Amino acid sequence: MLTFNDNLKLSYESLFDTCQVNNNIEAGANSIISKIINNKARYQSVATSLNIPWYVIAVIHNLEAGLNFNCHLHNGDPLSQRTVHVPAGRPVTGTPPFTWEESATDALRLEGFDHWTDWSLPGIAYKLERYNGIGYRAHGINSPYLWGGSNNYTSGKYVRDNVFSSTAVSKQVGAMVLIKLMVDGKIIEPLAEEITSGTTNQ
Image 1 (cartoon, rainbow, N blue to C red):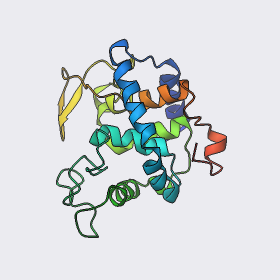
Image 2 (cartoon, one colour):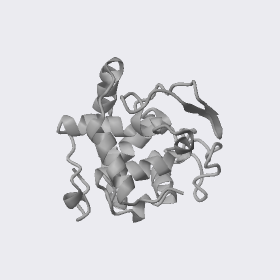
Image 3 (cartoon, rainbow, N blue to C red):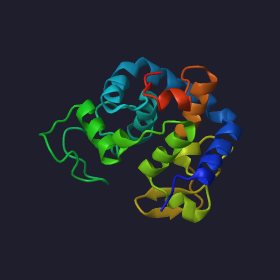
């Protein structure tokens, strides 16, 4: 159980404020961001219908599918059939092959993104951590899904569903690390007062 309370918000804020991108991944991270920006319209089309910041969908897409629009947002399985890996059998309605937009909408609704209203940086971090799973907390490490490629993460990784290795190291750039770079580059401005008032299209 992970409760979105004041202590958790402060923890996310501290991690974000002190986040430093590792030198060896910065070029790769910036390449990812360039690809994300090039496809902003596709992320925006789903974001607008669900009232979600477009860049939140983009960083999930990078982690789950390597920005491949032929894969489910749920877990990177091919859109040619329903998902096989967790969560399996998605989307439950419709007939494959699915469009990326159909699948993305299903994935985000499944995780309650369409009902979430706190799109401040802590609110984003919370939803992203829940999307991937909170199992890293039991091992006393920050989730690489959020912080991979930064000073906030060193090692420890789920190498497959429910199998954790303390020595494995995630090679992915964490979602909050990408968001940090986009904030610092003035590509996005995730200000809580603007986002929670309904302006999610920054």
